[in-house]
Every structure is written in C-alpha cells, then in structure tokens.
Amino acid sequence: MGILDAWFTKVLDEEESKTSSGKAKKTTDKEEQEKQLARELAAKIAELERKEGALDEREKLLSTREVEIKKKLVDLKLLRAKQLEKLEKISQLTESKAKDILLETVERQLSEDIARKIRETEEEIKLHSEEKAREILVDVLQHGTTDYVAEYTVSTITLPSEEMKGRIIGREGRNIRAFERATGVEIELDEANVIHLSSFDSIRREIARRSLEKLVHDRRIQPGRITEIVEKTRQEMDRILFEEGEKLCHAVKVYRLHPDLIRMLGRFKFRFSYGQNMIIHTLEETKIGVQLAYELGANVNVVRLGCLLHDVGKVVNEEEGTHIQLGVNLARKYRLPEEVIACIAEHHEDVPFSTVESRITWVADAASGSRPGARYEPHEDYVQRMEQIEKIAKEFPQVKEAYAYQAGRYLMVMVNPESTKDDDVIILADKIARKLEQDASYAGQIKVACIRETQVIDTTRAK
Picture (cartoon, rainbow, N blue to C red):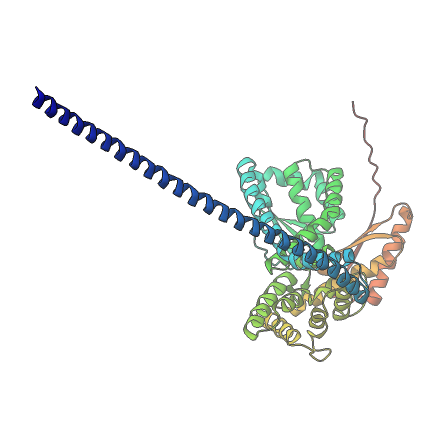
C-alpha cells in the first residue's frame, strides 16, 4: 500500500504541476495580448493627436489667408473706385453713360444680323402661310409672286368669260367710259376676251390693272362702284410702292433701309429710262457690281448700296434738278455713308472718281445700260411728249385731271364742276387746243375732249 500511495501521490503531483504550468502559460499569453492592444491604442491616439495638431495649424493658416484676401479685396475696391473716378474725369462720362454707349455700340453691330434673321424667319413663315392659304382659297393664286415682265405702254388682262366682257362694257358702253375717266387709261377689247390697258404712265396703268382685277372678282361693275374701286386702289399705291421696293431690296440682299427710301425704290417698277425698266436695270447693275467688287477686293456693301441707289434721283418728283443731284440730296437726307453718296454722285463721271467703289458702280451701270436690246431711246421721247401734252392742259385752273390717249392724238380733260359752268367748257376746250398748237410737239391733230361731270353719293342708315 505504501508503494501505491507513493506512486499515486507522485502522479497527482505531476498532474497538478502540469495544470499549474498551463494556467500560468495562459495568463502570460493574455497579458501579452493586452499589452499589444494597449501599445496599438496608444499609437493610434498619438497619430490622432498629431493630425489634430496639423488641422489646427492649417485652420490658423487659412484664417490668416482669409483675413489677407479680405483686406486685398477692400484694397481692390478702393483702387477700382479711384480708377473709375479718373476715367470719368478723363472721358467726361459717368459710369452709367459709358455703359449705355457700349451697349448701343454692340447693339448697332448686331442689329444687321438680327434684322437679317428676322427677315429670313418672316419670309419662311410667309412662304408656309401662302402654301396653306392656297389649299384653302384657290383665288389667292392670283396674288402669288411672279417674275416681273417689262411693259412699255400696254398691260393685258384675260377675262374669264364673254359674260364678264359684257359687264365691263356696260349698257351703251357706260362702264368703259366711266373706267377710262376714273383711271386715265384707254381700254381696248379683242375677240379672245383679252383686255388691253394702254397708257404711257405705268403707275396709272398699274392702278387701272389692279382696279379691273378687283372689279372682275367683285362682279359688281357699274359707274359708282368703278369710281370707288379706282380711288381705293389709288390710295393703296403707297403700300404697293413699299412692297415693290422691298422686293427689290431683298433681291439684292439689302436690309435696314429707311422706309421712305424703300418706297422711292418701289417707283422703279413703274419708271423707264430709255425704254429700259429701272427695276430690271437696277437688278442687273447690282449683280454685276457686287461680282466685280468680290473679284477686285472692294467694299461689297458700299458697291451694293451704290448700285441700288445710283438712279434714285430719277423718281424724285417733288424737287427740280438733275437726277444725280437729286439722288445725292436724298442720300444725304437719310444719312447714308459718304462712300455710297460718292457712288451716286460719280456714276456719270460728272465729277472725278474718288473711290474704287464709285468706279465699279460706273462700270456696272454702263454694262447694264449698253448691252444689246437693253434700251430703246424713242420710248423716252414718247413719254416726254405725252407728259408735255397733259402738263399744258393742267396749267388751266379749271382742269382737275388730264389724260393723253392714242399716242397723244386724244386728250381727255376732266373739268372741276364746282368752278366751271357748261358754257365755260366749250371755251376751255378751245383755249387748250390753241395752247397745244403753240407749245406742244405732236404729229397730226390732237382731239381735246372736256368733260364736266357731277356725282352725288349717299348712304342709307343701317337697320
């Protein structure tokens, strides 16, 4: 038993020794882990403290810089105020006034592009609106744009039927007589239902053509209605002239002209120079001049305006003088550039050429006017003779209107009924005939027809 007890005791001691040794070892590992964690935590705390210090330093630096920037901004504002004050003293302009001038300059530079864009947009809208209108109203076709055909003294209108021809003639020809008296244009009818309107005055003939078209469309053709339509069309001529002038300007790519100048250019459609229609002449000359300007490196815009306006003095009826001087005066009135005025003044070499642009205008004018078939000089003499006959008749105070027909062989004189009696008309016709014999140049005879007519128009009240 003693040996077993000793052995058992020894085994227990060994087991206890092993257990104690394992516990001690576990305790040591745990302490090492805790120490390691403590060291890592201390390192992180130290890193955070370092970063915090760096942030504090950076914040102090930013605060210092912010103060410096604010100070510099204040200094800049003071410096700017001093500079503005000096500039105002030198230019004698306030800041607001200088801004206005600058904005006005920029707006003026951009206005041409803006105007062109607006015009292109308007034309596009107009094109589409006309296409839509044609689908809705067939008769709008008669108002569509067509190429202009030069007419010397005759315009033609095709009637829709023989019945309409009878309406225009009227009972015993009263409608035709009323139309000729109202318009001063001679009417001729042929068997093909075509009406010929004859007059040396193209504006008068255009009024008659438009009036007759309205009457045909309206179908109410009688003397009172004829007088009303003709007078209304005559009042619309101002708008018609503007439309024709605008077409011409757009055809040569000129925009922003004064409306009065555009209206003057519209008269070109109804004016001939040596038998050459002035719109056709102006279009030809401007195209030639612009191309020459491109080829020679000249100022294209000056040449464009110079060619467009070189003959504008020919349609100035309110003043006397050569067409060159009248054109120069008109250009100065509307403050056109001096280079353009020089083109107008020098296009017939009345004064020496001062610019290459005025020389180009002269070359283009000569090229258009001298090409074969462009001009027919006797037509100009014919127009002058007809105008002279009418002018002589209008010198008498009793005459209201005078219209020359049949190449000057027939003169219809409309007498003012308020200032003339029936017996006076016979004496007046004789006086006009004798005056024509003395002052007018004509071949054969001139038949003078004096007409004294009174019309009274009244209107009922609406019910």
